[in-house]
Image (cartoon, rainbow, N blue to C red; front, side, top):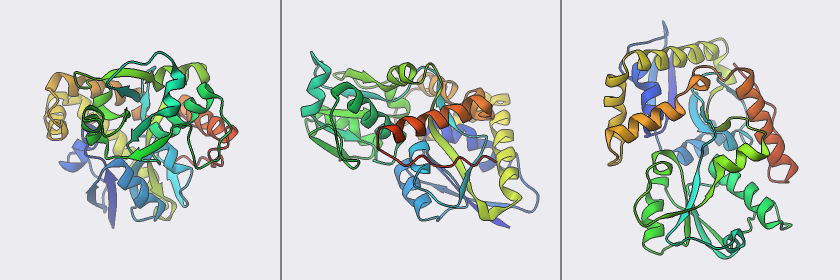
Length: 285
């Protein structure tokens, strides 16, 4: 049986999938085909049911059909998350309503959080498909810092390792991890999840176990796994990549458990109450 698995070219995903890519952990009778794409590309592929298993944004799951969420492989922020940056500091959060903001994709959880936060801060009545910002520009995640520094956009929403090591000349305007902590009463922030098509049947939970074993193997061989993750470092130093990995490949990545499940429910409930999404049914395997 051949299973197509999608994951991102990012250090945390690379770390988690290291043992699978290198054949250190396997499922008997299953051949894995790896598809490595930017998170927004994977989100779009999931909407078209093009992959058997894939990493996607928690936000994107609300628009998918025929997928279950794996208990392992999710990325949860523990009091941290995406940040909004600009070349200049602002005096009031109201200034965000007049900015041109770059986001890494409208299906990303980062964008969903920004939209919810802006609605809360700016207290505007808006159509479901709009945000309070004057203009939202979708830009590949690793090009957002350049877009802000060049003046192409007024502000940019940073994800992945850029959120902990953004470039000189940028100022943090809004920390969405902190905002989430307030509105969720301290729940972890569900950002990325792994999903499996329901058509896999009994193979789906086996893939979840495989991913859990892969993460465990990576931590047991931490230096080797970080060496592999450095292929996707985008110029960041090893210390930053190791720190980023430890932040997002945490205990909830091994198994989200009840805490992670409740965090997902809270995310979808808050977004639904603001009229942004229809609250999805969460299927866990």
